[in-house]
Length: 622
Image (spheres, rainbow, N blue to C red):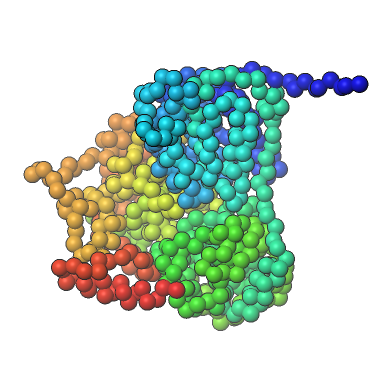
């Protein structure tokens, strides 16, 4: 006798409808409670997605919100910031048309890839059938007809697929979501969606749309690796721990980090991504490490006998281009969920979750503490550095203050519940050195990609993720001019930002770097650029922000800024404060060398002098 084949219950939907319904059915467990995994979808519609994805998003608009933005790169930055502020536990999708709309997301995809942050990218694509080719905005490759502009996403995606048949979604979309939630592979996932396939129907299994609650894996440790790490630390007298972003992305690891530091007397330095994992006022926190580091952290790094790299990818700003703590050859313990990062620079690897590792190490190291003299040095250096911070962030009455003084005012205004947002130029370095973070969520600086234009869009994403926080966006005039359109989005959506715009009339950070490596001013500040006889325009940033729907004003000096910050806090919509700053001032204290090659030959003596200094520093690299 033969048994009847069981029937799979199906529902007929377009590929786009199935995609949106599946996303709406995904949940994440946070602190024991299920929440929607996706905060919704940013969408800028064009002919490549309006009829397919647009129709599908409209149908689910009450359960899966759609947000209109003004620039595809900007909206993707906002989506990435949303995920970063949620510590990778929630995320958003972004959909565009084909051609320029899709390509505008590639830069943001690179940012997400560099920072290991999740975002689901859904660019429209050309016709899978190729019947109407070449369609509007299609780029043709004579010898490779299957190539489209969306192939540009491949090197900046952790997962990439092109959905050429509706049924491919059943396997590919869950794989993309798994990538977004994976602690090792986390990064952008891209599904290129041909515009004809978006509208094609298929009998999808009903089970594809059943609610699913996800949990992020917290990988355990290998016993042999753990034993080797314990042995290394037991011999250490002068250990230093560097806290990276992996601490923030591991549940409760900040609390475990504080407990570990207290139990074992270990000083803790911070990367940009790890800043805020330990409160600035914690006795073990010695501040930022590396090129933009504190004197306290860098001095300890130069003397440490063991460096614990916890949840950091050890980029060049962290290691001083491998010339800071690398120079004297301390033993290096790399603790990371990713084998790739844990093994960097010849480290003794301990592969696993940061929080899991801290707990296991602390238990195995019961009774072990750093040397008393080392702990006292930590206390003394920390005290001396905080005196520097107070000095360089104080108002000295200058009409055109330094960045450090502006950030000091923002820090005081933000208090315990505000969040500062920044991304590129000189401001991230000053923030890393000087900003006194009050814990997770108080400090949001994108510096893995150092992407100009992230600031305002990123602030929008932070506010969407944490509406209870006052969000302070710090941005230079150069970044503002690159990408400011999401100011209008913040007003439209009612997500208030406080934007502090520092106008030094040019790219002040690179102006200072150029002076240090080339010895001239050329093409960075407006004063050194080729211009019309009348010179560069005097831009009224406050008027521009008002035209986008914000409240805005110009102020003079730090006293004017602090008064305006009070008015901004009282405002009910996005408020921009612009002030003139000094392009040449930067905090001299702290920091260490950064490998930026100087010309080996030049007709100018200034370059030859700088090359000699560069060659000296190169000798320190490990």
